[in-house]
Image (cartoon, rainbow, N blue to C red; front, side):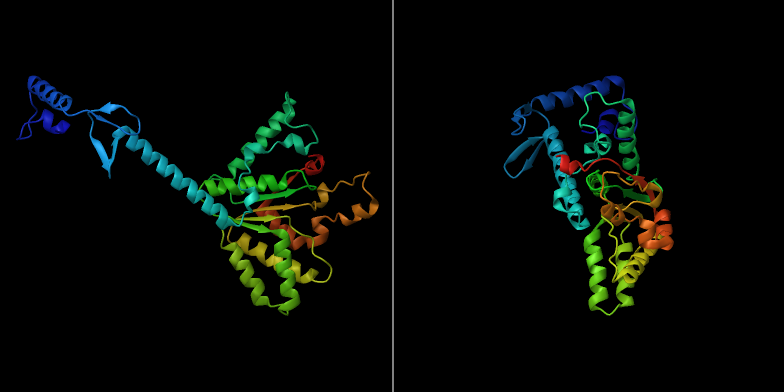
Length: 303
């Protein structure tokens, strides 16, 4: 009996309070006289309706819990599939924003038992800043993460990629070295096919979110061709207003800091992006990405 049936007559009028009380007591008595069945999940006896799945006897509460667990499993499976489809290497699948500690990039021990207030504030700021990129209302710009090896660039971008996957997106993860090899091979073996360059740029720009891990400095031989191909890619991303996240060991000119402990020949090899790519490409990157320079020692070398 439904609640409506319990409180209304057959012609739709409201019953008296005495009739309603009598109907409720009758329904309660009928329920109490049903055989009490034991739920195989929780082990409790119940007079509620039992859902039968084959030979299973499961109470309503446990059935709801099962359905919620199944939804969780399906969501996790879809998340892992988006990770694989993104091209993110499997070793980065468990990287999280909460694992990144900017104190490491500043050359301080991590974790710090009692971090200076400035470090604590920076840690919170980094987490909130990069989490904000994963919201639908965030502007379309991405980030150009610049810094020496081992300062956390890959960890941050992999964590961002994972978060986008968790939020239902399928980003595109591109290894800069593989992209460089692809463009260079085209220069060597496909006689500078302009259609190949355009097709590559359009294919990459079809993704709403693109990660370019470890942007390379081109070698001398295919320099113009490499910059031209990369310029086509960045231009397509800009035209389609995609979110782009780029990491590189090569700094912007305004962030270039010469290390007095570094041999001069190594300092000279540390080219800045303006010199490598020129103003046209960097102008487009500026429109797509905000620069975030990271500093500190190579934490991989420090263990």
